[in-house]
Length: 167
Image 1 (cartoon, rainbow, N blue to C red):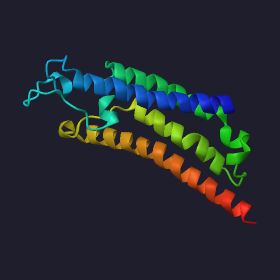
Image 2 (image 1 turned 90 degrees about the vertical axis):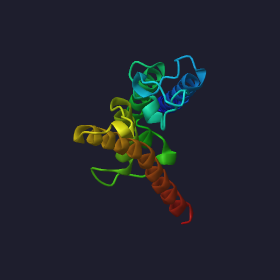
Image 3 (image 1 turned 30 degrees about the horizontal axis):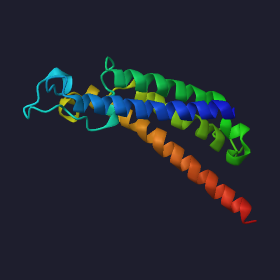
Image 4 (image 1 turned 45 degrees about the vertical axis):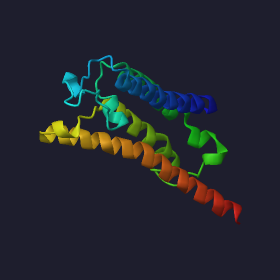
């Protein structure tokens, strides 16, 4: 359980770090003959710099996207399989109902991560149809579930710990 948690955290860190390094390197390398997004030349004569990490990994054929996808999927499965909120005492908040804090803590961040990895984003200027707008909003919801879900569950756990220690 702890080893799967560590593996999941390590893979998530690698997903973001490697994708960032490879993608930023590609932007600054000037080897693509000043290509903008989707192989169009930039009017400025400089390479295109992605606005977000999501945009940076949106093209499945790019190395940054492949690294991000593979390590994010591995991290998500490791976190879900680890069942760490039930196994580790320092994060266990008890069992209260069907939607316990432990279940939410186990599922919400990894599902958000998988959503971000599976649904590519399209640059704002190219979101012309309702389908593309919905797809990008679902991607953004996954990112919020990943980051926000983790932060909310962590804050709740720390508040419960503080209440327990103050007794």
